[in-house]
Image: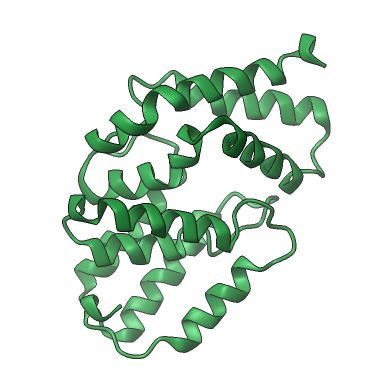
Length: 198
């Protein structure tokens, strides 16, 4: 936080920790954030403004309700309000907000720090099969209230959407590291979701 010129932020940190401990979370919890921050540490030199990427990763799943459609927007609003209250430059708050909104994964991020934020968030897709499968099961647990046939159809649409992209990852170093295993994991997951796999 000091890299952004911010003062003490203990209360916000405690609020974030509490949010990531909410009982409905099985994947989108503190472990996911720690994993993202760990990967950022490995590739920090790729970021133009690493402190902003770090802050975006901290906040990107801060609001997570599986029955809602505005989680990223509310998370982005929380981050922007925190930055405004802390006296950060408005341009920094706007960039962090954009990074978080891009984790909706509704479109491919263009480049730069927004792409790096999204690529780090999606790195789970390209992890070893056992880790990916644990992620896949945890997401299903988060949506346990959705009937099986609806979940399989909607989940297949999401996963196929990533496969249909020319590239899942935009940042060259992360594309080299995660692209091929991510495509293999996604194909395997789609096979499990097929009706004949039941």
